[in-house]
Image 1 (cartoon, rainbow, N blue to C red):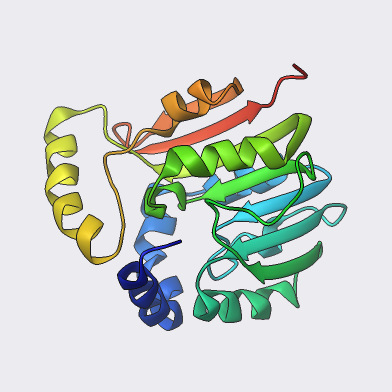
Image 2 (image 1 turned 135 degrees about the vertical axis):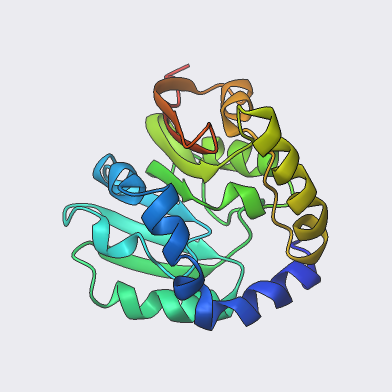
Length: 205
C-alpha cells in the first residue's frame, strides 16, 4: 500500500497540481506527452494518471484505463476524461498491485509518475505482467542527470522530497525496464539527461 503521508501530500496538491507543473511542461518536457500518447495503441493503461493531462492527447481509436491512488487527483482527471476523444475509464488503484489480469492491455503509459512510486521496480514488473506479448511500455520521466553537478542538486532535493511526498529525482528508469525483460525500441535523454523518453516492448517470449 502507498504511504499515507505521500497520499495526504498528493491530495493537498491536486487542486493546484496543473499550475505547479506549468514550468516543467513548458521548459523541461515540451512535446513529451504528445510523443508518448501518439505511440499508444489498442487498450491503454495509464498508471498514476494524476489530473489527466494526457487524456486529451490520446488518439480517438484507443481505449484508456487510468489509475491513481489519489481520489482528489482522479476527481480532476474526470473533468478531462469527459472532453477526451478516446474512450476513458478511471479507477482508484495502487500501481504496485494492479487489479487487472495478466496480458489485459496493449499499451502501458507512465508519465512523470515512476518518480513518485515507492518501489518503481515493482511498478515496472506489474506493467509487464498486465501487458500482452508484443505490448508497448511508454515512459516519460525526470531521472538522474548525466551531469554530476545537476545530479548532486537532485540528490539534495530528493533527500527532502522522498520523505515529505515520496518524490525521487535520482532514479533512472531504463535499467529497471531492461532488467524487467523489456526490449528498448526508442530512447531519448534531454536537458542534461534529466528528462527521459522510452518506448519498450514486451517480447513474445
